[in-house]
Length: 283
Ligand SMILES: [Zn+2]
Image 1 (cartoon, rainbow, N blue to C red):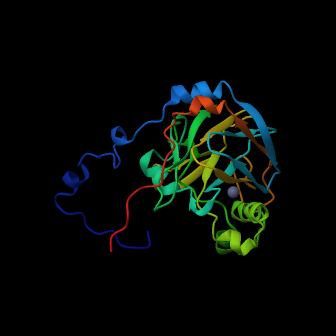
Image 2: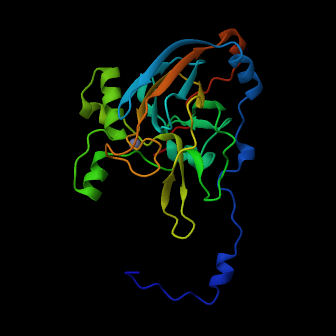
């Protein structure tokens, strides 16, 4: 310890013994109709697919009512996902609020929320073949919304070297290509990610963010239902399965596949498509 720890007050034990309260009670959050989504899933047909090469990024589009499948194809691989409203890039995935409303890791039935002032579900997780994983003995789970994304700035800060295929860079490149803008312009829109297939937690003793080998295997997928028109970008992280290192060419890396499916949209005629929040900020 480099700093002095203050002497605990006389009632320290009592203060620590107060019971935790879940910040956002789940009972007040309206659950999506998963039975209806299952009906729609049963009719869906693949209309497009995109291969994301290892240590690279690609964008994809999914109209409202379609399904997006992120598939492991050749070996254990983690993907860093960004989502935008395809018609307004200022509305984007809000990993912090998604974590607060659901948990540190997300799975089937959870939703991916958008940034303020819109704050609506951009997507609902409709299927997760890793849903069996739960929480392991290290307290880790899969598909985290606690990490940020590997980036070349932190890499230079910590290692003093430059690496050009970090997820941040890959997402910038994917968005720049999709929107026909410069890397600098795209960078303004890249945000904290959903770490698809990534297995992470906090160490019990020091509460530090840790990663361990992803349990994903070829054939596994995470599937999202697009609640609004989506533009997405996915990076096949240079960390591969994130069992050891990232931000280098050391780890074994594999491609990822993004599949877009269209269901019978008539089945979703009564789906409660989310509107942007109606709240207006007061001066
Ligand atoms: Zn990464």
